[in-house]
Image (tube, rainbow, N blue to C red; front, side):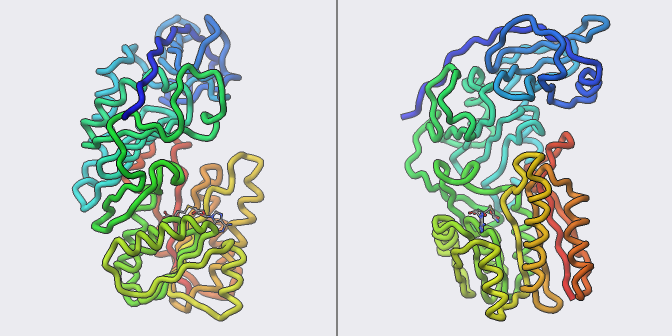
Length: 406
Ligand code: SAH
C-alpha cells in the first residue's frame, strides 16, 4: 500500500536581494544564499513561495522555494515571468526533462535519470527510473508541499508503476517538516521486491532501491561503462571502487578474459556477483573485499598487472575544507593505479567530487603521470551521461579521463 502524501499549503513571501544576487538570478542561476537576502516579508517554512522583486523597480524577478534549513536559502524555480506552481507547471517541467533523455531511451536501456535537480529546474530533487520503479530522492524539505504534483507526470513520462521516496541524510533527522514520510516510503503503487531488475545498454542489473547508495545505483557513469565494454575484448581488468559491478559487468560482456572487482563493502561485492550472474558472461570474475589503498598495494606486491584499471572513488570532498585531503587521496590512488597498469594498458581515472573542478583534477592526474617514468597519452575525457544535463556551473561533478600508459 502506498503512503498518503502531505497536504501542505505554502505561504508567500516577498523578498529583496542584494545586487550581485540579482545579477546572478538574471543569469538564471538557481541559488540565493542567506547572506544575499536583504528583506523578507515573514518567517517562512520549508517550501514557502519566495517571490523575489528587483530592488529598483519592484518588478517580479524570480520565484523560488524558501529553505530555512540551508545556507542556500532560496532555490529559484521560475525566472523572469511569474507562474502558478501547480500541476500544470510540474507536468511541463517533467515533460521537458523527458524530452532531453530521448536519445538515451532509444538504446537498449530502461534505467535513467528523469530529473537531475537544478539542471532540470527542480533544485534538490532527483528522480531515477529503474524499469517500472521510479525513485524520487529529496535533498531538501522544500519539496514536501509539492510531492502530490510529482506523481502524475513521473508516471506519465517514465512509464513506472511504482514510486519510492528516498530522503538524504539531513532529511532523515527528526525535524520540523510537516509530514510523516520516511526514507524508503512507497508513495505510489506497490513494491513487490526492493531489488529491481533493469537494463543498461542491453545488460541486466539489479538495484536495491530502498537500501542502495543514492537511489540504488550510479546512472551517471553509464556511458563510461559502455566504453569500457568496447575496450575490454581479451583484456584483464581491475575495477576499483566497483560497487554493484557496473564496470565489471560491461567489461565481461565486452569479452574481458578476467575482471577483479575491488570494494570495501561486502554487500556491494554481493551485488556485483549477482549482477554478473544476471548476465550470460564468459571470463572469470574475482572479488576482493578490501580498502582500495591497501588492496591495490597488495596486488602490486603480488606482481599483478592489468590491461585496464578503473578507479572510481566516492566523493572525497564533502566540504571546501576537505579539498586538500581529497587531492592527496586522488594522488595516492593514481600512483597506485599506475603501478597496476601493464605496458600499453589503459587507466580510467574518475572523480565525482563537485568541489574539485575538472581542469584541476586532470592537471593533478597528468602531473602524477608526468612524474612517473612512463609515457602516456590521453585517449578521451568524459562527463556525466546525457541523462545528467548540466545547466549551471555547480551542476557538473563527474569527470573521467582515459589514459594509454606506455
Ligand atoms: N564504480 C561504481 C560506483 C562507485 S561508488 C559504478 O560504476 O557504479 C563508490 C564505492 O566505493 C562504493 O561501493 C563504496 O563501498 C566504495 N568505497 C568507499 N570507500 C572505499 C575504500 N576506502 N576502499 C574501497 N572501496 C571503497
